[in-house]
Image 1 (cartoon, one colour):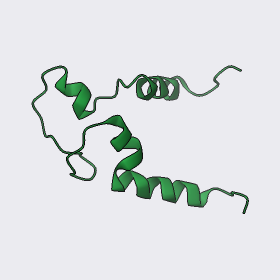
Image 2 (cartoon, helix red, strand yellow; image 1 turned 90 degrees about the vertical axis):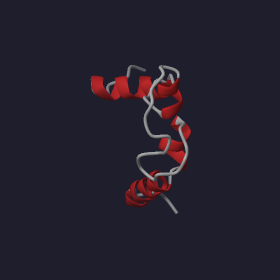
Image 3 (cartoon, one colour; image 1 turned 90 degrees about the horizontal axis):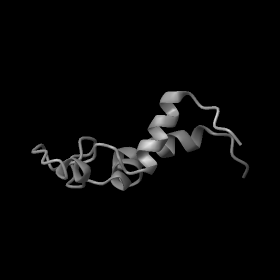
Length: 73
């Protein structure tokens, strides 16, 4: 099955799946000297998992998205 999503969406998916997003842990590999906290929740976390799954802001986002979907009960 071919991916019919827009090119930017495919690129974004590839970046996330390849762990290439500019998260703190990836930026540290390139000697980046910026903040050590998450820009969404200001917690001291630096991984892609935190950004997309564990940040309190992200969790609220997923709850909002999932609650708006017509899911079977």
